[in-house]
Image 1 (tube, one colour):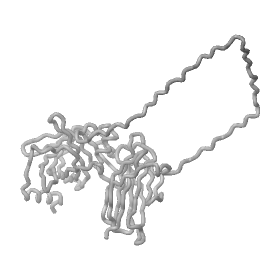
Image 2 (cartoon, rainbow, N blue to C red):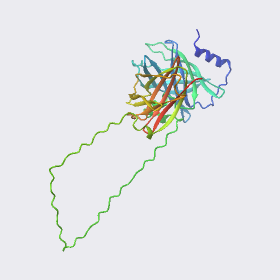
Image 3 (cartoon, rainbow, N blue to C red):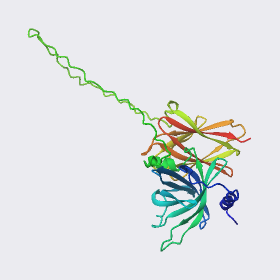
Image 4 (cartoon, rainbow, N blue to C red):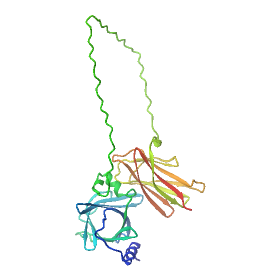
Length: 341
């Protein structure tokens, strides 16, 4: 049985698209990669950058297995060979695979560029290099260029690793103006004392009955500064089931990010430490549920690598949504749920 990705690839070829090599392919590309050997389809992202006519970038492979999140982040190089764009691994930068990937095995993808109805695609085949121990693995790559980088697994990960500035299509965020207040020491007035003036010193009486007052330690609850922060709606999800399964993961380096989740202002998941392991919560939405439901992600901290980023997986029956969010000490991220009619 032919894989759906191959069918899509062949259907694109039948449309006789126009190949272009003067085209600017820099930017974020999102899609999937299918492995012939394992028969697995994995999430795949590529960020392509250009500097002095040379194309470089990063790739990010992501999948969830048995409720655990796995990823691999690689540095890549891109070149044109005849009628294809060739993307080749340079090095593995970060990963959390259970076993160390074999040395000397690099992925090489030969992709065709197409543009249909204003949408850009990179489609083609990949193979891995042959070694003494491993035969080449093969498969299919399908990527679509995205203008919105907010729902990316690659960009937040590069941000946390301080590598996002290597991408030419990412504009650096303006540094916040720092208010510097220079305190001038008060001038000490010199007082000339008349020699005829006698100065008496008051005796200091020691009070031995001093009582120490204990200041109570006030514990702040979850989402203590909710009303002090702005809220940004990042996604709208149309659901059809009477219950939704929510699963939380970290969205990059596991660095101690903690979030609280509120639904229409009510706390449903307080103080959740994000990691590669799933944190699950089922919410029930009967017919009496409001037409619009807000799910708000509140950053309790920034972890060791700001900002606080996470992945929310929403399972609505057989449909799954993956929503990546970012929050900090000034901004909350919100997802709006509306029942599909």
